[in-house]
Amino acid sequence: MTGHHKIAVLGVAKRFGETAGTSVNALSMIDLSIADGEFVSILGPSGCGKSSLLNIIAGFEESSTGRIEVDGKPISGPAPNRGVVFQEYALFPWLTVAGNIGFGPQSRGMRASKVNRIVSRYVELVSLTGFEQKYPHELSGGMRQRCALARCMANDPDIMLMDEPLAALDALTRVALQDELLRIWGEASRVRKKTVVYVTHSIDEAIFLSDRIVVMTPRPGRIQGEFVVPFPRPRLPEIRIHQDFHGLSDKIWLMLQAEAGRKSC
Amino acid sequence: MPWPTESAEKPLLGPELSVAGTTRSGRSGRSGRWIYYLVLPVVLLVIWWFCTDVLALFPSALLPSPIRVAKAFGHVIADGELMLNIEDSLLRIFYADLAALIIAVPIGLAMGLYQSIERLLDGLLSLFRPIPPLAWVPLAILWFGIGTLSIVFITFLSAFFSILVSTVAGVRSLDKLHIRAALSLGASRRRVLTHVVLPTTLPSIFTGLRIAIGVSWMSIVGAELIAASSGLGYMINYYQQVLRTDVVIVGMITIGVIGLGMDLLSRWVERRLLPWRQGARLP
Image (cartoon, rainbow over all chains, first blue to last red; front, side, top):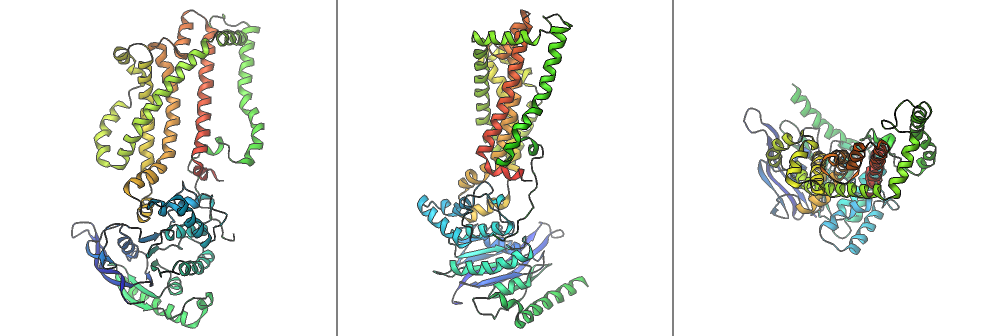
């Protein structure tokens, strides 16, 4: 599984502002490689540049230095092999659930009958059966995010980039969707395991979901440390109350705390 | 589904909330509401009738009684004159607004998407916009003579700016995330334009078109007073000159009713074409 690198982040830095005095180092020399099929969380407080890093991997933003390689080839701009799920869902309000999910396959020129088959498959996968003809404004937050997830996966991307996808939801829905997310990821990965880069500021969420956690700290945004999550898959909801879960959570928390303390001095 | 519903919807269109009827459940209450709409017109009609036919306060050449107006209505309908003039005016509106739509929407999209194009055009357009359409009448008569072409030209100008301004505003409401989502789903730049930019802008274009229809209906009547030999504007001007005030009033009422009808129609079409906009009306 860790045979070759799916994504390589090579010396990526990002600064905003041009003159030396006013420029801000959003990201400073990030090096990171992510294996094929790995679920990696990028964890950190707001302002640490984690979303910036994700946007650079997605191809939405350009880095000031360094480059991103996917399958050994440098990227240029967004591409359908790197699907994105946004915190604000970013569903197209003028399309129905089915229209949103079918957008990707349609964009890539698939026949209508094939698009329909894909749509009904993913509608079922994210449990939105019966809501195909609803518009996003008619759905709850959790349903919207499941629709956004289905839209991303309908393109069958190798890589899924998720930018705090559950942060806009209430606590109960969030926990329920974490379970859903792993189930859906597992289903979608049946043929070929999908690589996930998951940005979050929730320690517990990162532990529950990922194989590996990359901790970032702000000013300048950089990688502070990494943790491998030892829990086997499939992850059962109960591991959230396991002692080791809390042990890991505390270790990560201490790392973030130490860094925050150093900065405020 | 057990997922809790979010109530983050903000009503985007304040005034629309009360005007546009909503869903099936609202329809049953609607029949009763008509009475409210009719109260004041009926009261006004009674006062008008009382002051003219009963009290005879005004000479009928200045203000004829509603009964005389009703008779005149029957007369101009019977001899086909009214329909002919309505047809002429409506056709001119149609040509003018269609041309305005075809020309203003691409310019508006380009201005909204590219700052350089906006800078290039903004000065010129800001200078022309404050000129009332009717101020173009003298030039229009010189260039196109008296008749349909002049009227269409003047009406076009009045519609053009409403659609342009709304289109630019619509492009401004474009969500960066929608573009990013579309690109990462494999959409080409062209598809982003037709399947993201255009649908985002469509509601604004529609609002612009609705305003344009209202504005151009007003300016067409004004223009026809001077620069036409047919149309509702021409009709009321002609009958004023021969002192048939009753037919003048017939023309005015017709103008009002058609204006109202066009507004209702465009709202109905908007609801049918842009169903996702209903989201803005959720309570």
